[in-house]
Image 1 (cartoon, rainbow, N blue to C red):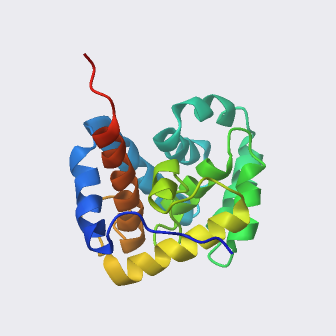
Image 2: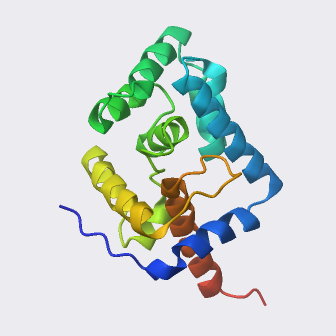
Length: 190
């Protein structure tokens, strides 16, 4: 079992989640909002390339080029599995990763947009805030358990934001902690 070691103080998580959104540029906010709107549409049976593309674009503009090479039928099949309320992580992730342009990180973003109360994005910054590097699907399941536990105890929904669940607040907080840490240690240009 993976040992997650939270780097920021637990008491900082909500502040960091709020700071993340405040410091995001307009484009990042628009992409995230569009992704969670598309996730809701997928959850309600709209298994389209347009919806999937909005989510993928939020996490990786580069992956969109590969994504559009998938057939509508293969996208529909993958999204049916991913959006199933009864699908396990170990079923949903591989179904999505069968699509061109979808790796574990992007699959986690798709799942987070579809079910923000169940999934968090497997982001390198959030993992750094937990003292870890990116791994495999089993690792992602353990990461989700850790984030869900933090959400239950230390985070609240960020009302009015896309994916306004405690789980998404934790993911934002962990990402913000890592970004702030990098900014604080970055060398100053002469």
